[in-house]
Image 1 (cartoon, rainbow, N blue to C red):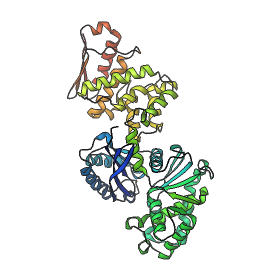
Image 2 (tube, rainbow, N blue to C red):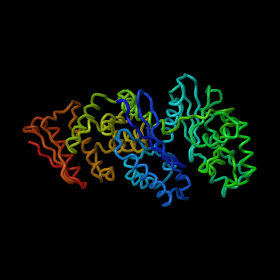
Image 3 (cartoon, rainbow, N blue to C red):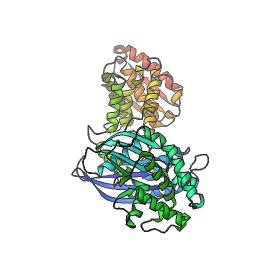
Image 4 (tube, helix red, strand yellow):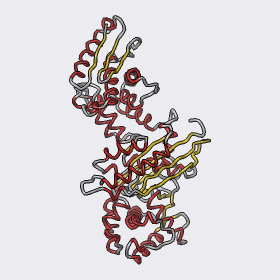
Length: 491
């Protein structure tokens, strides 16, 4: 990546939406601008786990403002990630589609584990180089992430559906603060986090760090009241609990360092943090400077380095694990991308998802050669491959599922032109590579006009490749039963 490159990370959290713009120069990221808006989407899930119209409008309005600031940014230098609230929301697709349009960039709803990975990356990016064993805890609005790592390498990741916003709403309704409510909230939090003991055993880290939301809210109050210098400990949490009990209600909390936007989620966050301290035997945690958005920025840097893209590494790991024939996968991937560029007229050197689908389309053969495409799709969708958003894995899975056989099983995917073109390119590539050799593509053209595709081959091609011509005829028949048409001009 050239120096002085501008990057942007958008974090769509349950409590706040954040935009971090940084300049990458001399192997460091310097903050250019930071915008934060409290949208409280975590409060906007109804009993059916749908975002209310009001919650969606608040989020869209914020994204529209962020989008204005990001106009003209290189799409390869911007990433927007959404976390637990949108993971839970049943109507998330409607929000994400409109939100992506307003923002001007696609929104990725990332998995809990990928969120944990990015949090760890962001935290360690702000720490000095060290081989210490690190525990990182991030209590967000509707989820809590734990990461155990060694130096810069995350080794164990976990995400739990428990957060400051959700716990405040559930155990402190109307903002009433009582000893009984805190006791119930902490007991419930320990029950949810109990399984963390299996992985995050006391003594398995040298230093513990608390990141983002609750950590910052607690830390700022403790520092402002002379109770701490960048550290959260048991005494500080006990003191803060007593201050909240004296206030009796959230709206009566009067503490130095207490920001208004953090007031409604403080009680739930403290309950979860106290439960985690007790459960994992934590005496103190340093307040981390890095967070999810810094992790996203560093991922954007890595994605531009040949050996640094986690997704590429994950694809290679899956190919190795399931003994994929690499040469054949490369032939299919390159052929699919060539055909896609022919069809779209794109000058884009790589279509990464199409490339990865080609490389991994046979990943399921190790399980069973019969209907292997279904096994391949299942593996890709549920692999939890590092670096991928859930929507990216689903996209890969649908491409691989549809690369052979009838098209009805992916009719929703091919209902729009982008999906149809990607899948057609992949299916044709598999046919042209059926002999498990790089195909002869010179003189071959693939064109699109409306809902019709035309594949034109050079003179005498069908006589030279009769089996390929036969398979292509079957492919044209398969597409005839869809809203799309494939016309063959084979001599």
